[in-house]
Image (cartoon, rainbow, N blue to C red; front, side):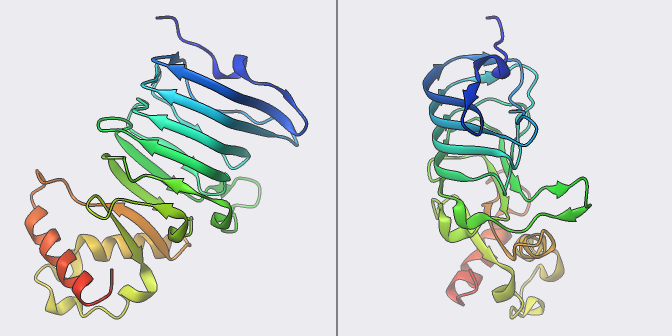
Length: 219
């Protein structure tokens, strides 16, 4: 199947480029990197991507891309779907059993100022309750994210500061402590992370710690 260029689908809009009210089923894209015009934005609105694939595996959604009423269902895109936390996401659903392999959302660095762009997660509404892959989300208010508690964990770095890690078997190498540090380091102070795979070496220990932390009200 011949790959489609995403840029060829975008049409001129009032504030940039827009792709609206379309459904793509088993469509192959050459890459998935919306490129906003100078002083403008890209808008994806009312778009459903069903079992689509990115041929080169590159999926990067930048801060000046707005997603509204968009669904990604089993979206195959290399090692990860990367989305800037600053990109407004309103009623966005990402779901799938196998794809994407990982969902990675974090704040981007402003190349001109070399400083973190302020948190804008208040604009977001994201549903990952039907997504089974690996998750790492920071930079968005977690209350704006619908999760599946059996698959995902909401982590608040400030609350985790009170944990007595010495009382836990793993202590400093706890995966949940690392998650809290990541949320703090990336500037948002909170995040959503996936549960470890049952195949992972430390699965049982991580799940036991998770129960302890939840019972104590830290998670």
